[in-house]
Length: 486
Image 1 (tube, one colour):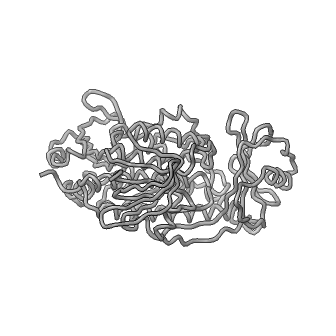
Image 2 (cartoon, rainbow, N blue to C red):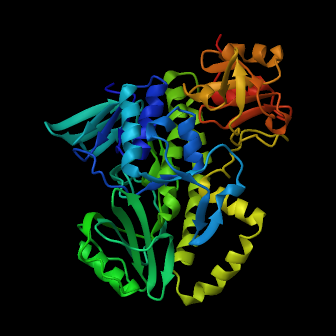
């Protein structure tokens, strides 16, 4: 085998997966068609759940202390994310190029083999491996691996080659995007409805403004190249009356409101993550963030199967857990699309929703939905409120040293957190110590829901909690981490 896993695509989802696999000691080759990063940033910002995810891998300091804000929106309707509990707020001005740079540095530092200038051409699946064909700077090459993962975006070549079904709705409109220097425009950070459509503008720093314009009634075009800046300037002038033609574009792109979701995230030895599995209107940067979380969910499971500590059936939970997330993602972005791009007929809906978000319960529901913090997985029956959810960051003392629950996940292993100095769960978990860290910790803050012990999966979700889980601890350990050591 050339590698245990071949990942196609070195965007955020592909690089996050490469880092997760290497953290578990699994060999990975990443094939990227482009010879060098473009520096372009379709995605902008990190949601609360992604901030938590990066915190549990110790990556947040690499972003240089990004500015965070409790302010957000749902379909252009202002929303206070401060109603959500937790240690983190969303980071609003983190360009995708920085996220990719951080993830690539992390993955390479762990030993990932990232090969740029290598275009995927196809594959053949055999009983115990896949043969991947690509074209690199030195000509054609073939790689053998146990699994192939497509992280190659909305036009995924891996998805097409593997025959995944990708149903959904066609694009009905096109929006133009440009990062521009040398213009002074009023800020419209969550988008502003104007008589002819929608305009968004936000300062990115270093004299650059991001502009997004959507003209109502403009059908999507079949493009073979990015739009010209003149198109953006002309549309901006029609919508606002202001001339920005003198601006200097950093880059220009376009996107649509097409919405599609694969019917399965795995077909045999081929899996999909990120935009290869779901496309939608990029409302609130949810696509990139969801893709990163797809990969964190997949990484530890794929590694456990490859290392032989868990059965191949564990990979089935990647689809069963993440496909519903993708379905809810499309639902909320399509709803936002109507609010952002709809005409006067949507006005009453905006007005009613604007009244509803004044109620904290409604605001909390919508903020949790677009932040990813409402995600809960089926980890088994029980009455404990944390089952299947994330453990909020909990400061603890371990062996006389102050730390927190996120830091305990830096190694990407499972964690049994004994919060009551009880030898019983520690003894029960002992046969899994080769893949689960058993930690006795003294809480430095109130423990959520009176938890005496919690079992954390490597992705930070609670797989078992006491008191309240109907499964006993060994059952939960075997379900998520495989049979005990003999």
